[in-house]
Length: 366
Ligand code: GLY
Image 1 (cartoon, helix red, strand yellow):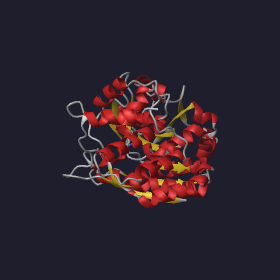
Image 2 (spheres, rainbow, N blue to C red):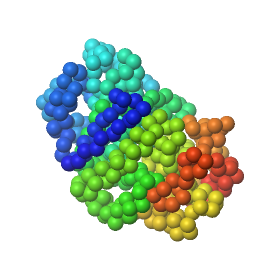
Image 3 (spheres, helix red, strand yellow):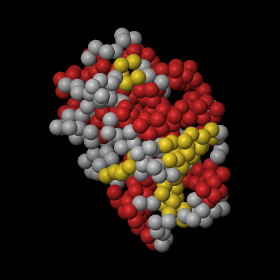
Image 4 (tube, rainbow, N blue to C red):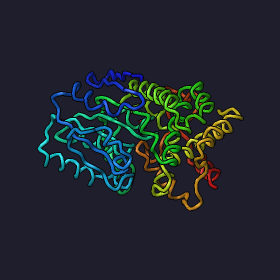
């Protein structure tokens, strides 16, 4: 079992510990009772997590108010779900002295975190991620939100958790496609921050795919170390935090245009290849780099090409509406080498002409 402290210097209260271990779920309520004794607890989870037995393992015999999101997944990540959660909490007479416990994947964490950000002007939240994508990425850093009918995370707030518990054993029951897709965020962390971690992931991929808990603990720890350092440097994404969006500009567009038939990590894998093609075109990618990245992503059996059914015009429209777009065109995060993001003129994200993106999308089609 290991533990990491996240310190957010610009917001004194935002300092929290990430606990990482195998089989720690059952000990969490007692720990939360000790650390947050004056607060009422309210669990937000989803029906997949309940079916996997994680809610029962977490709560044992403890009686805790619970909201179960059903159906699970991105389709429920909208404002009506947040309204239902808040009304369930009101019916349970909960007040500002509440700790919301988000137990589940990225969707649960995003919805529960957003409910915590706005319920009675804000209550505390603990994140207990149970998927590869949420353990690597979304449970740490305080991004919360839900989708509108037009775009992803259109409603959102920063709400740093009070504590994060990562139990890698919860990954044992995760569906194989979700499992592999979520690991793309680990590859992303390696690509933006740590070339040794990139080699580690490649070397240990058989054990990772075998869900070896010792290796998974190491993976979780390294992801959190990388992510926490970036978040602490730039909690509200003014500049450096953008590097966490590597592969996400094209990735989000592909994910939305596929109407979420592609999973987040699958779409990000395509986006990473897109970012690499752009870097190649702009002349700062060594010739073998794309191949090395393709090899690593291929080990996860995720798609690396845009499915034929998606229209390029739709992708372009979504890219123009990207949250970070200025004058309807986003900046792109690009690598200058594996383990390091291209940094120029004080900026971590860069202008890329529409023509280059157009040609890149062409090259990305199946
Ligand atoms: N997932 C990107 C971030 O947390 O900034």
